[in-house]
Image (cartoon, rainbow, N blue to C red; front, side, top):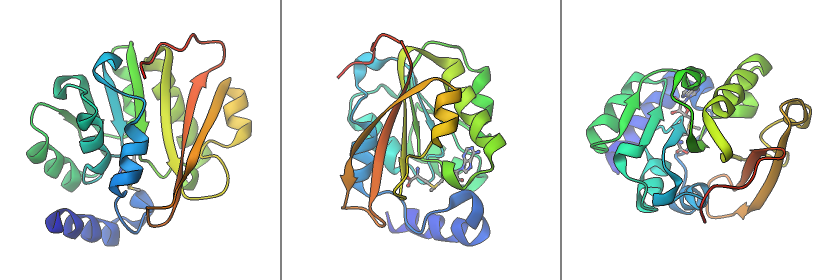
Length: 191
Ligand SMILES: C[S@@+](CC[C@H](N)C(=O)[O-])C[C@H]1O[C@@H](n2cnc3c(N)ncnc32)[C@H](O)[C@@H]1O
C-alpha cells in the first residue's frame, strides 16, 4: 500500500490536472462506490481507477475479474493495475474510448475528476458510458464538491435521473456518491 501511495503521489506531481485528488479514495468511499454491484451485475467498467482502491472494492462485492474492464489513461497506473489485478482487463486509454466496447454493461463506476474537465470531455465520457450501459444500468460518480458531479444542464440534456448517497466523511476530502440512470429505464441492476 505504501508503494501504491508513492506511485499515486509521483503521478500527481507529474499530472496534477488529470489526477485532481490529493489522496486515493478511502476504503469507505471505495465501498460506497461499489455498493450497487455484485456477481449478478454482469460486465462492469471502471473509469480512472488510479491505484485501484475502487477496483478492489468492486471485486470484493463479488464481481468476477473477467467481468471487469478498467479504462486508465495513465501508463504508470495501468502497469500497476495489470500487476495487481490478475484476470481484470486493463485498457490504457481515455474513458471516452469505452464507447467502442460491446453494449450490455451493468454498471460504469467512475473515479474521474469529471467536474474539473472541459464540457466537451464531460459529454464524451457520459456518452461513452451510456452507449454501453444496458437499460437500467447505472453510472456511479463521486465528487468532493457541494454540487452533483454531472452539471444539471448536461444531465437534463442526456435525460439522466440522479440519486445522491450520503456524504462519506471518512475520506480526505469528504465526498458524495451519485447514481445516474437514463430516464424511463427499468432498474435492472441487482442490489
Ligand atoms: C482522482 S484520481 C482517482 C483514482 C482512484 N479512482 C481513486 O478514487 O483513488 C483520477 C484518475 O483518473 C485518471 N484519468 C483522468 N482522466 C482520465 C480519462 N479521460 N480517462 C481515463 N482515466 C483518466 C487519472 O489518471 C487518475 O488515475
